[in-house]
Amino acid sequence: MKRKITKTVKIGSRVIGGGNPILIQSMTNTRTEDIKATVAQIKQLCDAGCEIIRCSVPTMEAAKALEEIKKQVELPVVADIHFDYRLAIAAIEHGADKIRINPGNIGSADRVQAVVDAAKERGIPIRVGVNSGSLEKELVEKYHGVTAEGIVESALGQVRIIEDMGYDNLVISIKSSDVLMCVRAHELISAQTDYPLHVGITEAGTIISGNIKSSIGLGLILHQGIGDTIRVSLTGAPLEEVKSAKLILRTLGIRKGGIEVVSCPTCGRTNIDLIGLANQVEDMVADIPLDLKVAVMGCVVNGPGEAKEADIGIAGGRGEGLLIRRGEVIKKLPEEELLPALREELLHWNER
Image (tube, rainbow, N blue to C red):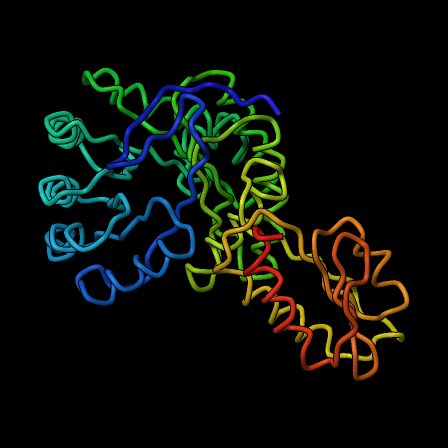
């Protein structure tokens, strides 16, 4: 796919836009004031592949906590601000690498100007975020409801406010829980601006429904070359967001690296705990830095054939199973030895 080349924006030690890799974001769900818990969660997310982290800043104590959090983590920290411009300024003063605001809910022009001036002084970007749920009343009336066109007009209007204040170090985020509306909005705004876009489906839902909606929405948007950084928004642990984002990017061929696990559905021929085995394999390979496809198959009848496109695989039978390398059976093993044998193969893969 051909990606749209947007403006380059630096967020801490990371860079988005300009054809740089699409970066994965998540958001902490700890109280930001609890520095120990927040740092622990950020480090866990970093280990899982998160590249930019956002923290809520609902209080002055949370804004001040960013300074200590920044000392203890490697990831760029984005401060999420709503309503109180003073919290935005305090977050900037205490080291936020980027702030996320909706100028429309910050208050008067003077207050927005104060935030812009603080960001400009330290050279940090502002993410202008507009959600379908916060669309201005006049735009809802103009478009006879919440529409992609209205979301885009709102976002570009907010951007112009900041541009008129003399600042263009910006990232745009437009989100909707309506997947197809969100896709259309990104198509429209991508044609009208060169600012980098933070892409996601807001309020996507729980692990299952949220992943389905995010995969479809992000897939349709990213496949058109639109988007510079993404977040999969789930009602669940932030760690699940990062896992899903990595898989979406790998599935689209945007990211390489990391082991891809493929497994067959269960059927009447399955004589092993295929579901448990596949989950064990996914957990096992998470820390192995290889760009491979691993197959987990439920029976020895179709296993070798179905696993032919994988680099390495296992197929279970009644009390035993096969270890398969690029479609060729290399070992027959007792069932309990399949997982250790697979791990041994992977750990020594580069020696073969």
